[in-house]
Image 1 (cartoon, rainbow, N blue to C red):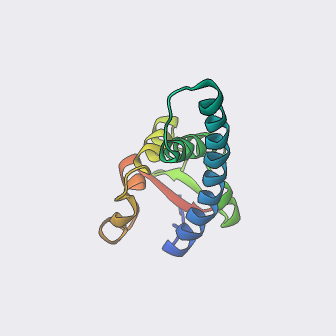
Image 2 (tube, one colour):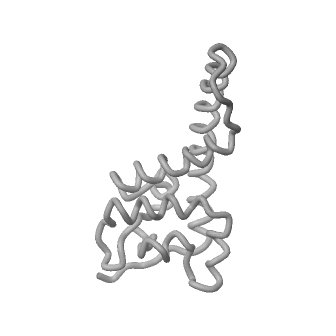
Length: 127
């Protein structure tokens, strides 16, 4: 298949749009959870745990079902495996988990792709 990869600018737009949604999900979940902490005196976890969980759930669910997220819909791109087909659920789960690393984006100059693309053997291409 002849696939046209996306550039860094498109990936940045995807990141910003998707992180707005991830933040909203995490914020709402955290506020509901704080209510339970206050009234039922359960263990407290900080917002970072909710943000990390939201990242994994958001990307895993959307990319495994649609191969896209709202950011990718906006930029007309999608996730594919190296052969150009829909990636497996395991590859999507690996992508989502590797996104949690702080150093993920710093691999672009060395690999010409992010670490989560390299490890999961996936690409983001123009749809």
